[in-house]
Image 1 (cartoon, rainbow, N blue to C red):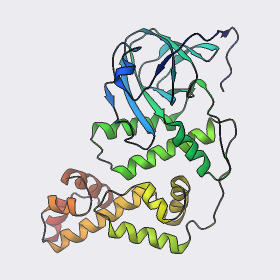
Image 2 (image 1 turned 180 degrees about the horizontal axis):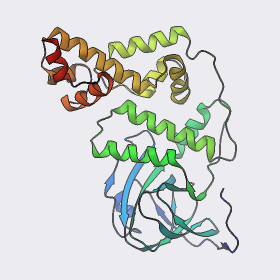
Image 3 (image 1 turned 60 degrees about the horizontal axis):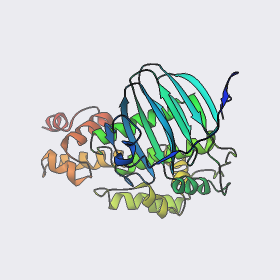
Image 4 (image 1 turned 180 degrees about the vertical axis):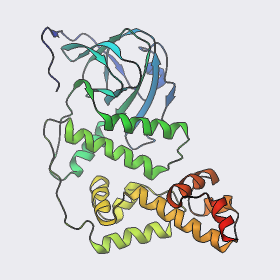
Length: 309
């Protein structure tokens, strides 16, 4: 936990307001306005995102049944924060985070209108991620005052973009982001750090083959990290680590590559229009195909077809 500076006040906890930060009706009890953007409860396997813009405000002491990670997005903002009985005043910079463990009383006030994200995490999902490391049965998430963390800032923005695009990246992409978030918290913000077991050479060849065959057979379906990890008979986080070691890319990157390659094959065959090809290989629509096709092959599908003539 970040140590409080000289002069930090020790405050006694009063009766706190219990808030479920996945429910707008409860958030409105203590915040001046609701979320500008919010994921659906249960949408991301234990991770919920709320995007807020608030004028200067004083938040009464609250307590959440979920772990909270606040990500500051805009102009530097002076804020006073109390976590349990410890109080600090900090100037939050863009990308700074604040961690409030579940059931810890939290009070805040700030003097500038600003925007931020709240990533609220189901403690059960957090415990499952801890146990999946194979080296810990439990790990206590520690409170942190204003702390710079570019990775969490980037994951938060990526999840926000997914909401704004109606899930354009797909379930496998958001699964990967949420898994990365949980693993990063476990490795950097818990009292006892896990030691992940290493397996030289990545996945066993038989398990890798099973996963790749599954991806090939269901490329046009909604693939999830949980399903792929189950085929390999391991946790999603460990599977992601070994899959990348085996293939040189993440599961999500591999799936995108395979979809682009199959789209290329279908375009060469020339039997389907581009929009239909996009759906056949698992992209949400033609624009989704266009973006990834150009990223991997350097041209759009339409330009690619012209070069075939």
